[in-house]
Length: 268
Ligand code: ADP
Image 1 (cartoon, rainbow, N blue to C red):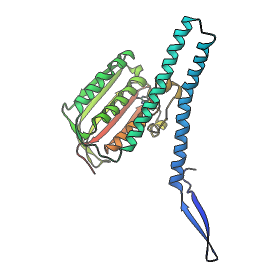
Image 2: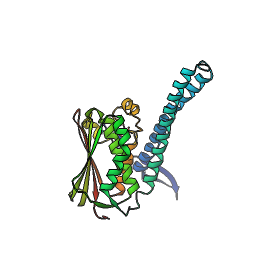
Image 3: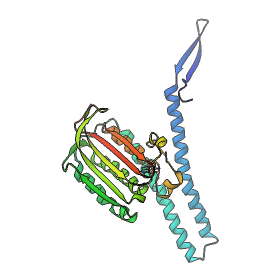
Image 4: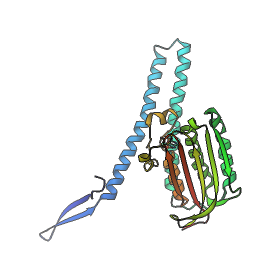
Protein backbone atom coordinates (compact mmCIF):
# COMPACT_ATOMS: atom_id res chain seq x y z
CA UNK A 1 0.00 0.00 0.00
CA UNK A 2 1.03 3.67 -0.23
CA UNK A 3 2.08 3.71 3.44
CA UNK A 4 4.63 0.93 3.10
CA UNK A 5 8.22 2.00 3.35
CA UNK A 6 10.35 1.37 0.32
CA UNK A 7 14.06 0.73 0.83
CA UNK A 8 16.85 0.72 -1.67
CA UNK A 9 19.33 -1.90 -0.62
CA UNK A 10 22.87 -1.69 -1.87
CA UNK A 11 25.61 -4.19 -1.24
CA UNK A 12 29.29 -3.30 -1.07
CA UNK A 13 32.42 -5.20 -0.28
CA UNK A 14 34.86 -3.52 2.08
CA UNK A 15 37.84 -5.07 3.81
CA UNK A 16 36.46 -8.57 3.32
CA UNK A 17 33.18 -7.49 4.89
CA UNK A 18 29.86 -7.21 3.17
CA UNK A 19 28.17 -3.91 3.86
CA UNK A 20 24.46 -3.62 3.32
CA UNK A 21 23.03 -0.13 3.02
CA UNK A 22 19.32 0.57 3.42
CA UNK A 23 18.09 3.85 2.03
CA UNK A 24 14.54 5.04 2.58
CA UNK A 25 13.13 5.55 -0.91
CA UNK A 26 9.50 6.05 0.04
CA UNK A 27 9.24 9.73 -0.90
CA UNK A 28 11.18 9.56 -4.16
CA UNK A 29 9.44 6.33 -5.17
CA UNK A 30 6.06 7.99 -4.66
CA UNK A 31 7.17 11.10 -6.55
CA UNK A 32 8.28 8.87 -9.39
CA UNK A 33 4.94 7.06 -9.42
CA UNK A 34 3.07 10.36 -9.38
CA UNK A 35 5.11 11.62 -12.30
CA UNK A 36 4.43 8.47 -14.28
CA UNK A 37 0.69 8.71 -13.54
CA UNK A 38 0.72 12.35 -14.58
CA UNK A 39 2.44 11.67 -17.90
CA UNK A 40 0.04 8.78 -18.55
CA UNK A 41 -2.93 11.06 -17.82
CA UNK A 42 -1.69 13.88 -20.03
CA UNK A 43 -0.97 11.47 -22.87
CA UNK A 44 -4.42 9.95 -22.61
CA UNK A 45 -6.16 13.34 -22.44
CA UNK A 46 -4.31 14.56 -25.55
CA UNK A 47 -4.61 11.35 -27.49
CA UNK A 48 -8.40 11.19 -27.31
CA UNK A 49 -9.11 14.47 -29.16
CA UNK A 50 -6.18 13.82 -31.47
CA UNK A 51 -7.63 10.46 -32.52
CA UNK A 52 -10.98 12.13 -33.19
CA UNK A 53 -9.28 14.82 -35.30
CA UNK A 54 -7.41 12.26 -37.39
CA UNK A 55 -10.63 10.32 -37.94
CA UNK A 56 -12.44 13.40 -39.21
CA UNK A 57 -9.55 14.38 -41.47
CA UNK A 58 -9.70 10.95 -43.03
CA UNK A 59 -13.47 11.20 -43.52
CA UNK A 60 -13.18 14.67 -45.04
CA UNK A 61 -10.59 13.36 -47.45
CA UNK A 62 -12.72 10.36 -48.38
CA UNK A 63 -16.42 9.67 -47.91
CA UNK A 64 -17.42 13.27 -47.08
CA UNK A 65 -15.23 14.90 -49.72
CA UNK A 66 -18.06 16.30 -51.82
CA UNK A 67 -20.68 16.70 -49.11
CA UNK A 68 -20.81 20.35 -48.00
CA UNK A 69 -23.28 19.68 -45.16
CA UNK A 70 -21.14 16.95 -43.62
CA UNK A 71 -18.09 19.10 -44.18
CA UNK A 72 -19.48 21.99 -42.13
CA UNK A 73 -20.60 19.68 -39.37
CA UNK A 74 -17.28 17.84 -39.17
CA UNK A 75 -15.29 21.06 -39.17
CA UNK A 76 -17.38 22.24 -36.19
CA UNK A 77 -16.58 19.08 -34.27
CA UNK A 78 -12.92 19.37 -35.21
CA UNK A 79 -12.79 22.95 -33.89
CA UNK A 80 -14.39 21.72 -30.67
CA UNK A 81 -11.79 18.96 -30.24
CA UNK A 82 -8.90 21.30 -31.08
CA UNK A 83 -10.20 23.79 -28.49
CA UNK A 84 -10.24 21.04 -25.90
CA UNK A 85 -6.60 20.29 -26.64
CA UNK A 86 -5.72 23.96 -26.38
CA UNK A 87 -7.47 24.29 -23.00
CA UNK A 88 -5.54 21.31 -21.71
CA UNK A 89 -2.20 22.66 -22.91
CA UNK A 90 -3.01 26.10 -21.44
CA UNK A 91 -3.90 24.54 -18.07
CA UNK A 92 -0.74 22.42 -18.08
CA UNK A 93 1.33 25.53 -18.70
CA UNK A 94 -0.42 27.40 -15.86
CA UNK A 95 0.14 24.47 -13.52
CA UNK A 96 3.85 24.35 -14.33
CA UNK A 97 4.19 28.10 -13.85
CA UNK A 98 2.44 28.11 -10.45
CA UNK A 99 4.44 25.14 -9.25
CA UNK A 100 7.63 26.93 -10.21
CA UNK A 101 7.02 30.13 -8.29
CA UNK A 102 5.21 28.64 -5.31
CA UNK A 103 8.13 29.54 -3.07
CA UNK A 104 8.20 33.18 -4.15
CA UNK A 105 5.78 35.17 -2.01
CA UNK A 106 3.38 37.45 -3.88
CA UNK A 107 3.52 41.02 -2.62
CA UNK A 108 1.29 43.22 -4.78
CA UNK A 109 -1.50 45.07 -2.97
CA UNK A 110 -4.62 43.51 -4.44
CA UNK A 111 -8.01 45.18 -4.06
CA UNK A 112 -10.43 42.25 -3.95
CA UNK A 113 -13.78 43.99 -4.58
CA UNK A 114 -12.62 45.38 -7.92
CA UNK A 115 -10.86 42.14 -8.84
CA UNK A 116 -14.02 40.07 -8.21
CA UNK A 117 -16.18 42.53 -10.15
CA UNK A 118 -13.90 42.28 -13.18
CA UNK A 119 -13.82 38.47 -13.00
CA UNK A 120 -17.63 38.35 -12.99
CA UNK A 121 -17.81 40.80 -15.88
CA UNK A 122 -15.52 38.55 -17.93
CA UNK A 123 -17.72 35.53 -17.22
CA UNK A 124 -21.02 37.26 -18.05
CA UNK A 125 -21.33 35.72 -21.55
CA UNK A 126 -20.70 32.23 -20.17
CA UNK A 127 -23.20 32.74 -17.34
CA UNK A 128 -25.97 34.02 -19.57
CA UNK A 129 -25.38 31.21 -22.09
CA UNK A 130 -25.93 28.76 -19.21
CA UNK A 131 -28.95 30.71 -17.94
CA UNK A 132 -27.22 31.50 -14.66
CA UNK A 133 -27.37 34.78 -12.74
CA UNK A 134 -24.18 35.63 -10.88
CA UNK A 135 -24.55 37.97 -7.93
CA UNK A 136 -21.69 39.82 -6.24
CA UNK A 137 -22.21 40.46 -2.55
CA UNK A 138 -19.51 42.80 -1.22
CA UNK A 139 -20.19 42.65 2.53
CA UNK A 140 -17.07 44.82 2.80
CA UNK A 141 -16.65 47.06 -0.23
CA UNK A 142 -12.92 47.74 0.13
CA UNK A 143 -10.52 45.00 1.08
CA UNK A 144 -6.88 44.64 0.21
CA UNK A 145 -4.55 41.65 0.60
CA UNK A 146 -0.94 41.05 -0.42
CA UNK A 147 -1.10 38.86 -3.48
CA UNK A 148 -0.56 38.25 -7.17
CA UNK A 149 -3.48 39.88 -8.98
CA UNK A 150 -3.13 37.79 -12.14
CA UNK A 151 -3.11 34.54 -10.18
CA UNK A 152 -6.05 35.57 -8.00
CA UNK A 153 -8.02 36.36 -11.16
CA UNK A 154 -7.23 32.79 -12.25
CA UNK A 155 -8.45 31.39 -8.91
CA UNK A 156 -11.81 33.16 -8.95
CA UNK A 157 -12.32 32.64 -12.68
CA UNK A 158 -11.88 28.90 -12.15
CA UNK A 159 -14.19 28.77 -9.13
CA UNK A 160 -16.97 30.85 -10.69
CA UNK A 161 -16.67 28.91 -13.97
CA UNK A 162 -17.14 25.67 -12.02
CA UNK A 163 -20.14 27.15 -10.19
CA UNK A 164 -21.66 28.09 -13.56
CA UNK A 165 -20.82 24.75 -15.21
CA UNK A 166 -21.82 22.40 -12.39
CA UNK A 167 -24.36 24.62 -10.68
CA UNK A 168 -26.42 25.52 -13.73
CA UNK A 169 -29.48 23.60 -12.51
CA UNK A 170 -29.79 26.08 -9.62
CA UNK A 171 -29.64 29.11 -11.94
CA UNK A 172 -28.03 31.22 -9.24
CA UNK A 173 -24.44 31.76 -8.20
CA UNK A 174 -23.35 34.12 -5.43
CA UNK A 175 -19.86 35.45 -4.85
CA UNK A 176 -19.36 37.07 -1.44
CA UNK A 177 -16.50 39.05 0.04
CA UNK A 178 -16.66 38.71 3.84
CA UNK A 179 -14.99 40.81 6.54
CA UNK A 180 -11.56 39.88 7.84
CA UNK A 181 -11.43 37.61 10.88
CA UNK A 182 -8.93 35.43 12.72
CA UNK A 183 -8.46 32.08 11.03
CA UNK A 184 -7.63 29.36 13.55
CA UNK A 185 -5.77 27.00 11.23
CA UNK A 186 -3.81 29.80 9.56
CA UNK A 187 -3.19 31.46 12.91
CA UNK A 188 -3.57 34.77 11.13
CA UNK A 189 -6.19 37.29 10.18
CA UNK A 190 -7.73 36.39 6.82
CA UNK A 191 -10.34 37.59 4.35
CA UNK A 192 -12.93 35.04 3.21
CA UNK A 193 -14.37 34.91 -0.30
CA UNK A 194 -17.14 32.39 -0.97
CA UNK A 195 -18.50 31.10 -4.28
CA UNK A 196 -21.88 29.43 -3.76
CA UNK A 197 -24.01 27.56 -6.29
CA UNK A 198 -27.30 25.71 -5.94
CA UNK A 199 -26.43 22.99 -8.38
CA UNK A 200 -25.81 19.26 -8.38
CA UNK A 201 -23.42 19.23 -5.42
CA UNK A 202 -20.56 16.80 -4.75
CA UNK A 203 -20.74 13.57 -2.72
CA UNK A 204 -18.70 13.78 0.45
CA UNK A 205 -16.20 11.03 -0.41
CA UNK A 206 -14.97 13.05 -3.41
CA UNK A 207 -14.28 16.28 -1.52
CA UNK A 208 -10.77 15.46 -0.28
CA UNK A 209 -9.58 14.48 -3.77
CA UNK A 210 -10.98 17.34 -5.86
CA UNK A 211 -7.72 19.30 -5.96
CA UNK A 212 -5.76 16.33 -7.38
CA UNK A 213 -4.71 16.76 -10.98
CA UNK A 214 -7.21 15.19 -13.40
CA UNK A 215 -9.58 14.15 -10.61
CA UNK A 216 -13.16 14.49 -11.76
CA UNK A 217 -16.36 13.45 -10.05
CA UNK A 218 -17.99 12.43 -13.30
CA UNK A 219 -15.57 12.08 -16.16
CA UNK A 220 -18.16 12.17 -18.84
CA UNK A 221 -20.06 15.19 -17.58
CA UNK A 222 -16.92 17.14 -16.82
CA UNK A 223 -15.68 16.59 -20.38
CA UNK A 224 -19.04 17.61 -21.81
CA UNK A 225 -18.92 20.95 -20.01
CA UNK A 226 -15.36 21.46 -21.19
CA UNK A 227 -13.39 20.61 -18.04
CA UNK A 228 -9.75 19.52 -18.04
CA UNK A 229 -9.71 18.29 -14.43
CA UNK A 230 -6.81 20.64 -13.69
CA UNK A 231 -8.73 23.74 -12.57
CA UNK A 232 -8.83 23.02 -8.83
CA UNK A 233 -5.23 21.75 -8.81
CA UNK A 234 -4.15 25.14 -10.17
CA UNK A 235 -6.39 26.95 -7.66
CA UNK A 236 -4.89 24.97 -4.77
CA UNK A 237 -1.32 25.77 -5.79
CA UNK A 238 -2.04 29.50 -6.10
CA UNK A 239 -3.75 29.61 -2.70
CA UNK A 240 -0.79 27.74 -1.15
CA UNK A 241 1.52 30.32 -2.62
CA UNK A 242 -0.56 32.99 -0.87
CA UNK A 243 -0.36 30.99 2.40
CA UNK A 244 -4.15 30.81 2.32
CA UNK A 245 -6.68 28.00 2.59
CA UNK A 246 -9.31 26.43 0.36
CA UNK A 247 -12.43 24.86 1.88
CA UNK A 248 -15.16 23.05 -0.06
CA UNK A 249 -18.55 22.27 1.45
CA UNK A 250 -21.22 20.54 -0.56
CA UNK A 251 -24.52 18.73 -0.37
CA UNK A 252 -25.81 16.55 -3.19
CA UNK A 253 -28.62 18.22 -5.15
CA UNK A 254 -28.42 21.27 -2.87
CA UNK A 255 -25.23 22.92 -4.04
CA UNK A 256 -21.65 23.77 -3.25
CA UNK A 257 -19.82 26.53 -1.40
CA UNK A 258 -16.13 27.01 -2.05
CA UNK A 259 -14.32 29.32 0.40
CA UNK A 260 -10.98 30.95 -0.15
CA UNK A 261 -9.19 32.39 2.89
CA UNK A 262 -6.41 34.88 2.17
CA UNK A 263 -4.16 36.29 4.90
CA UNK A 264 -4.40 40.09 5.21
CA UNK A 265 -0.73 40.51 6.03
CA UNK A 266 2.28 38.71 4.66
CA UNK A 267 2.79 35.73 6.99
CA UNK A 268 6.07 33.93 6.99
P1 ADP B 1 -12.76 20.57 -14.39
O1 ADP B 1 -11.82 21.23 -15.32
O2 ADP B 1 -13.13 19.17 -14.80
O3 ADP B 1 -13.92 21.42 -14.03
P2 ADP B 1 -11.71 21.04 -11.71
O4 ADP B 1 -10.39 20.66 -11.17
O5 ADP B 1 -12.04 22.50 -11.80
O6 ADP B 1 -11.84 20.31 -13.10
O7 ADP B 1 -12.84 20.32 -10.83
C1 ADP B 1 -12.72 18.94 -10.55
C2 ADP B 1 -14.08 18.28 -10.48
O8 ADP B 1 -14.79 18.75 -9.34
C3 ADP B 1 -14.99 18.60 -11.66
O9 ADP B 1 -14.76 17.72 -12.73
C4 ADP B 1 -16.37 18.43 -11.06
O10 ADP B 1 -16.72 17.07 -11.12
C5 ADP B 1 -16.18 18.81 -9.60
N1 ADP B 1 -16.66 20.17 -9.28
C6 ADP B 1 -15.91 21.30 -9.21
N2 ADP B 1 -16.65 22.36 -8.86
C7 ADP B 1 -17.92 21.91 -8.68
C8 ADP B 1 -19.18 22.52 -8.30
N3 ADP B 1 -19.26 23.83 -8.04
N4 ADP B 1 -20.26 21.71 -8.22
C9 ADP B 1 -20.17 20.38 -8.47
N5 ADP B 1 -19.04 19.76 -8.84
C10 ADP B 1 -17.92 20.49 -8.94
